[in-house]
Length: 251
Image (tube, rainbow, N blue to C red; front, side):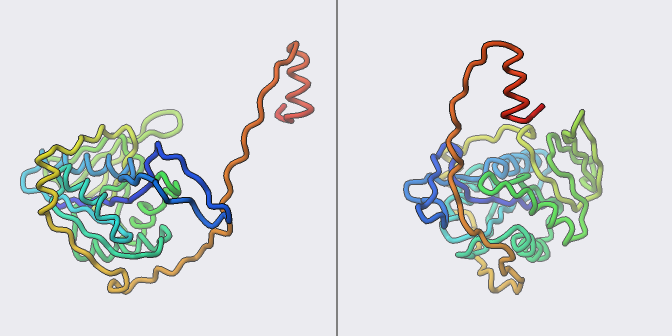
């Protein structure tokens, strides 16, 4: 079984993000970059499948500049077999990324694609769904549990929905997007880190794929959220009701 896993480079969740004075973007100096946490979960799930299904191969793919090699090496150190970097110095929108992935999938022909449900930098939560539509493949989003059939011809996913859990079954090939509860990612071992240096990492220029990656939206300005004002105490329930009604206008 061949499993394709997407990886995105994002700022560390613990990093303090600052907006440039002109609002054109964020200040990237001294920012620590990591694998998108949801993608890390997707890598872990693919490795668990590989450990259960003999002869499986895990292929990582990312779209971005050459600095993304660092995050791909992290996935290789965890245990993935090889990586593909589609080189683009411009940030691509979700639809453009989905179109790029279609080309990679047409070449690699994976049995299963596992992705993080969203990236923590833009929270678009769109590439997985767009990719499924472009390919005409079944999809199971926000997976909290993934099981393959004994013959690896189909899969079952449990996902959280409002008010409970939903179980989906679908034939392969298909696309799964990972939620936080799917698993706990492993740490890369020292031998894994050493082996990752020798594993294949293929680079493909985005222009060579022949897909339309032109942006359709433009960020006009970024602004830091306003600081929250301090609260105040009220003297009675009646005063609280009056404030909520007259000032907050929530009741």
